Image (cartoon, rainbow, N blue to C red; front, side, top):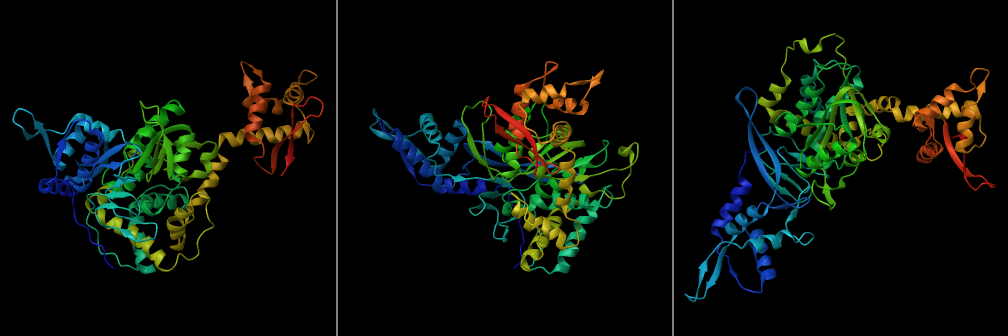
Length: 522
């Protein structure tokens, strides 16, 4: 089998316009029949193949043509909310509308009534329009490994492919030698980046491959690029991935000053159906419940801005983050692979490069997409041999992307998760408390109040257990004092977590009926 692509920027809308132009459907506006007329209107829209889909409401796809590098143009797909006026427009194109003129005793042409459009829009949960996981402008793979190459809606992935670039011919069963040459083409884009190790280089390769194959991978870890100083090339790698997947530089959003602010921005990106979501220039720690969920879960519930209702959204976005010395917090550590760069110069932004990788992709985007598809198809053709151990939550990505890279002689990108775990400030604080508690109190049982009292004991003119006191202060300080309730809440949220072979366990004091705590060896 070979795959060849053609440009079809307006084909979906053209198809609707042509179908509507041929439509001979007429809808009569009658009194006391609003529900029936609304159903007729929806039937007309479906028959005319109106480009309306369901994604946290009714949406329509739009393709923008943006200027690219060296006179090229990039066709970028996005989703827009279908509002009442838009639906009235589509209804008027999908059918003729008539209203009875009592004076002339005849039916006369008219416009679709606004209340008909509003009734259709109010039927959430009853719509017969197709559900949409996302809109993309690049071919991808399906869960069964076949290539999604035809423009239009794909029922297997619920993705809408619009305006794809022309691809080279891709064999149905590429050989390993062909896959090696395809990998060399991608690697050539990365030759001048200062990776700190081979695993970081593999993460960069995965960052290029993952968004192309997201149609067949339900979830994928977040790819993080980090460096000690600005100007090291962190954002450039993500721009390369975006150039291949969308034809433009990566759209970025800034991390908010609070987790709530960041979540609002992420919700907007999810609802818009972005295939690339990048949190740019993170300073310090990165975490958050929604971010963890949208990375690990194929379906998330979000609250759109200005709405009190939760909306379920299927996400096929590839998530990235960039920043200087980013630290992953809590559960985020097992959801990321990290590409570490270090140019080892004082002013990295002044470096000169012999190649211009972004322009290379922009000028022949299809060639690089074809290289990605060749790699994953070649690995599938030989039956996915020598797979790496399954990665919890990301089994498909581990099979399709991670193991394919290792099969082709690259380092395992998952090795970089250890770096994320070792640099987690939450794990670091828990580890310190476990060790200092064990050193000060052994394996004996204490209430939180008793533990705090022991940490404050004096030995001559200084604390008997200063490290233990400081560890408690780091997690349970409130208004300058150690707080028993705060400590109890902290211990409850971390009980059973094993670090360095130690964990907190809880029991009930038989006399006071309150919780008592101890450190146990796992």
